[in-house]
Amino acid sequence: MNAYRTFATAARVLRQLRHDPRSIALMILVPCVMLLLLRYVFDGNPQTFDSIGASLLGIFPLITMFLVTSIATLRERTSGTLERLLAMPLGKGDLIAGYALAFGALAVVQSVLATGLALWALGLDVTGSAWLLLLIALLDALLGTALGLFVSAFAASEFQAVQFMPAVIFPQLLLCGLFAARDTMQPLLEWISNALPMSYAVDGMNQVLRNPDITGDFIRDIVIVAGSALLVLALGAATLRRRTT
Image (cartoon, rainbow, N blue to C red; front, side, top):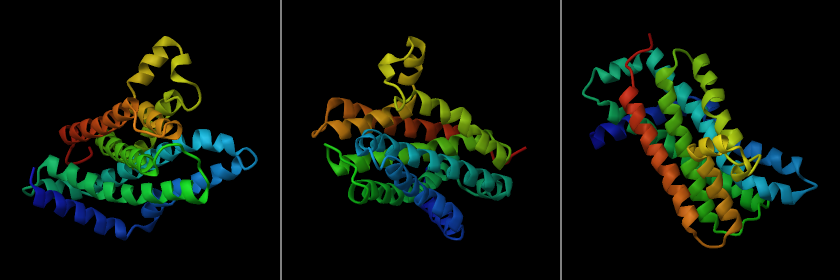
């Protein structure tokens, strides 16, 4: 990998996204709108919002970054841009890292806005530090970015990229502990849940919700989420194809 090529790729992606306001709005504003809607759905029961708001603060950015990243990367390949780039002295690792940096920068903005809205405008009550909540929200968004980059290699069209959401995101959503405690699930489902990164994303949010200090479980959760993102990025670089056939 070459740092100059990586940053040049990231700058090019950000310039392209600047001319795509719909994608920017989807990445940055949709999680905030969803949290706002959730808050007023539970307007008469703020305790329910407190109990699930932290978890969804991590899930919403993960889903939106997954969707936008997978479609944007696939568009690069189907338009021939990716093939032209890889014909230059640009490695797959440089390309994937550049995309990750570009979308990661947007993930930072997204996470700051969503966390700030939840804590200071919507009154989300957490016991732990707001900075820890922001950290895990950012890692969740980066995980969504990595998953989106990875699955884009296996889609032949934007429609197929969207179809990966039920296959990749929905099982994690059902098994992450949002709807039922993971230790109350059937043993097989609990085992699968323990292997899915979203489970640790939700658990990390819940650790901040319940505990005033950094716990060993919280450190485990952020390490697993960050490690999963790095692993998926490496797999994305290994499976990257020049064109869609």
